[in-house]
Length: 506
Image 1: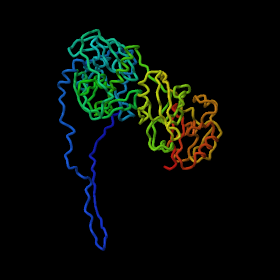
Image 2: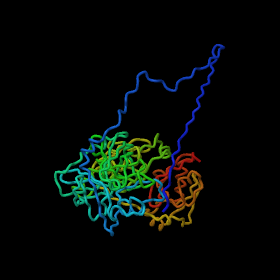
Image 3: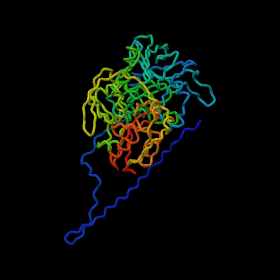
Image 4: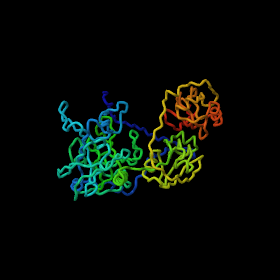
């Protein structure tokens, strides 16, 4: 097992030499300019912005009784995602990555037996109703045969899993009890970077451990998990194995998130922790209680992040928004008139800065909801109305090896130096393409195109115009003009996205 990569921070030394040399000739006289201050100082002192450190003792005394310990007993035949994550602790190819922590226990010293039996994962939860409803993470109880809850007063119960949702990583449990303490639910949409927050959990099995820190950022996307619909709260609160499912609290003692993951290259806390916003969690919990499952809205577009070159190719002043790479036929987006290469800038007035902003907004809405989608097309804004469908998960697949050049027809003669080759009917069938769709990239002679394309890629369109053979590809690239950025819709390894070739960077 390879050792994790180590990173060393070195001080950055900044040396600045400022010289002000000036000579002014006026009426035969030379006068040296006086040095000008870099900034003018205000005449009144700045107001006090931070007034000392908070004391969390009262908060912990009040909310602590509603935090519970969760033990999930997982049978030997289980193939849960929780077990799979235990079997893959290193992720050798990723030096830093998101980790979910629930933990099978701990060994006090190397070679000593585990403090908890094998097949038991340790997590945290909290009570949201006096009759015993508990929130925790999906990954804490995923695949568990038995879930046991220990309250702060040391009473223990066997919990029933009402429902669990992998996409939001939320699970709703129920114990047979009454008159229990509960936590107040806060407003995660009001959370801002810089606010104090507190976490209570069971790291390494140490029940009711308290840690505190500040909110580092909000609306964070997780690039390494399938949780596209969760805009995470990032904090610097110390979170470790066993903290998963515990509450993240504001200074009023209200729950604003569920601690879920850390970003680490060592397996332990490194100053970057992530929590599921409580509004996302409660939406999932209410649906789990009502129906045992969570449904989400679906627009029916495949999107990608905008780049500077994309924006330049589209004639836009900036790279804000989500670039539409594909529209599902018959989807709400298709019916609303959304087209490939549109840039989605807002939904119901809510701005889309990055492509990762769109899925949580759409996913939080119920199927059947009407939404107003603002897009930029050909440099002009358009307002379109769509009625959302229910989300259905599906992943396209294709074998890259099937994209090897086989057909004899080649054509060349375009400004980007892309050598296209016609696809055979068999190749299109294997790739899931329609008849007459796509051109195989056989060879790349242009440096700019070589930066973003690979032999074996299939070009589906130049801009919005479909291409189905090498001659059509050459014609479209010639029409686009030499020296200008060109957007190509490319199929690679089962995925489809736009890439921009910018000859100006050659």
